[in-house]
Length: 146
Image (cartoon, rainbow, N blue to C red):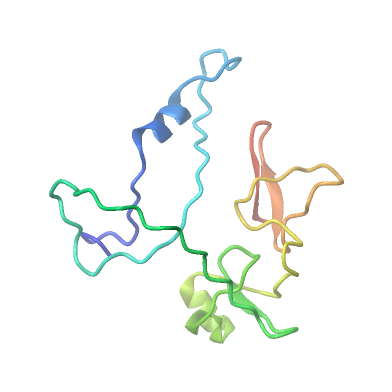
């Protein structure tokens, strides 16, 4: 936690402006939709400094760690119905529930769309993972818990 908050979001003002500005053909009405992608990262043990930032070189990007693979046929804990998490959360269904995850049968890699992934409802579209359905409105649809 940072300053007593479990999650901290650092979003540029442009994100909010996009969601509140009427789009062409919207007859002056904004839909309020703000498309976001996020990554959950651990917060530092101490509160971040409020002093002016100092310039530092940008490090080369590193590859994301691979998702934990569940043993063949075993269920696992997932936060997106698509990939398994490693560690204590996947040690059992009760642990998974305590972590806020879902106890799933892992799908084959790249066989379905994860939770919150944009989707289509056409017959030839890639399906949402088990436990999810493609939901939304005329302007935006995503895989959400059924």
